[in-house]
Structures are given as C-alpha cells and as structure tokens.
Image (cartoon, rainbow, N blue to C red):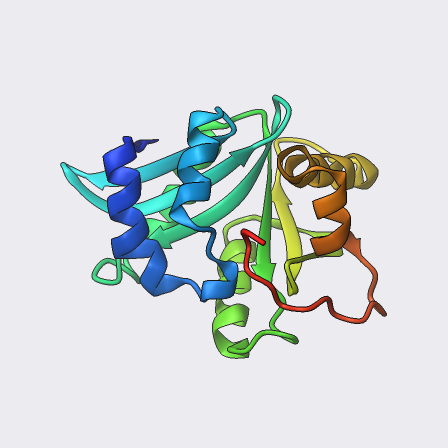
Length: 197
C-alpha cells in the first residue's frame, strides 16, 4: 500500500469515480476549486494505491506548517469494509507526523442521513481522533470537529488554525458570511448554499 499525491489526471479521475458518488452535493467542492487550490500549493490530494490501482483518496487542505484540514477521505465502494480507510489514516499520520490534522464530520443530529453521519463520525473516533469541544458550520452544513495530534493541543490554537485554513482561502467577508468556527450551540442554522458561492 502506498499513499501519495495524485497527479492532476488522477485527481480528476478520483473526483468523478470516488468522491462524486460518495458525498452529498452540499459537501463536495467543485473539481475546479480543488485544481485551483492544488496549483496554489494549499491542497494535497493523496491517493491510496494497492499496486497500481487507486482504491482510495485522502484530500488535505494545508494551513500554516504543522496544521492541515482533512477535506475528504474515501475508499472505493468495491473495497469498503476491508480496513482501507483505517490504513489510509495510518499512512496519512505517518506522512504528516508532527502535524495536527483537523477533521470535520457532519453532525448526526442535523444530517439528512443521520445513520451515515453517525457511521462516519464513529469511524474517525475509532481511529483515534479526539473530538474537539466545538462544532463547525460551513455553507449551511453543521459539522462535529475532531483532530489528531502527536501531543496536547490548546483548544484556542486549534480554533485559530482551523479558522485560518478557511479564511486564508476565502477572505474575511466570505468567511463571515458562510462559516462559523466555532459554531455556537444555540445558533440558528445558516442557509444551505453551494460551496463555491
């Protein structure tokens, strides 16, 4: 098994074959946004290979050195249930050793498919993710926040770095309009809008 950065051609192929069928439209960035971020040096679309076959993906949004946001994790539908998602996370943590990896999973309480959202969140916690004390809202979707780190993480620093990853890409105005990190527990949900709004 190997986890490595995808070529632009592989990125397009896995977007269509793996990500599009696996994620709700409200959670999926347009391919153009990913290729732009890759060209800008702030995105690392990793692919999991079994021999020469791509069987999974793990896309990362880079912040300041030492901080990264897990954007998407997906295993081919023909390989699910075989431990490849856990293997991807293990390899990811080796590649990004010493970094704090932030993640978001749709909040099961507010998800259109609560069973699937609970499964996804459970997968991350079974694979050693620590739940943060705050939630995130992005473009009208409410997420639970989690992370992996080699040592203790100050929650205020986690929030600051999490916000920076989004704000550095979108700017303060778009961030204020479509994102909340942290999202207050009593906040009225923002309208659901496309990611590239």
